[in-house]
Image (tube, rainbow over all chains, first blue to last red; front, side):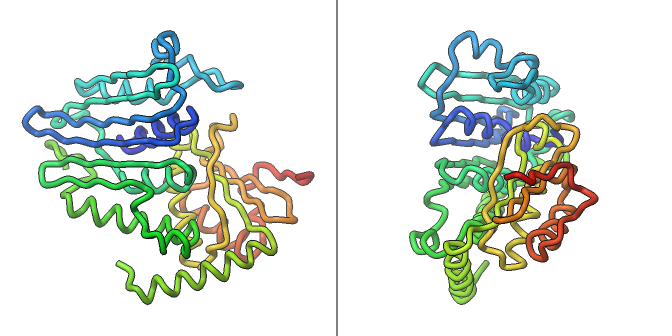
Length: 189
Length: 123
């Protein structure tokens, strides 16, 4: 994965495959503490202690017919490469929370990347999941939920393609107003 | 930003396409969005398909996703399903190929043979 937004899309896909109906993504930059924290929370089927322990093992997957599960191990590697880490909270039937922390100013930290593209592509493939997204940056904040991103009239009259295009426009505009930078701030870029 | 007029136009087009879809079944495009697909660029492929369909005003097409199907080396993988025609699976579909597949296969009903990795004739 070349940037953090791709890791996030992968983690959100894990939530979708865990039968989540709600997925929340939070991105928070904190210059004082020099941290970039991304969190994916879902209300999916969750994991027991054994599954949670194995989730970070690249040779473990819950999917049949596969021998590797690389999503979490890849994001863990990306985080640890720059002084960060991954925290997984989960329980059977109580959803999963994956929190990844990066050192904001570390030279090896991957850029945040195209967050609107991640959100739109997730919405395209998972129209029935209620997606919420929060961004907290130095210059501002932005919050959206997929059900409130469009008016009732838009939902009734526009098709999937038109809604997704509109979503992309609104997400890009909202994040630009909040001072979002695809490089994620820090010393790079 | 769209004006109200633009949105009204989009609405009319969408309604027309929805009516058409209800009577004849709609084309479906599926993008592989497993870890391998995402790492290979499936997100950009997905966005290119959405953008190209919008430009060509094909609001009748449904976009969906699937996980890893075991052909990781061929990711990003895109399946095009047009009612009454065989399902076609394309491999190594970057954004540029995705746009061409929309133009050629979905709009002009010509399969792009060079990038096909499977045809499901019996479905």
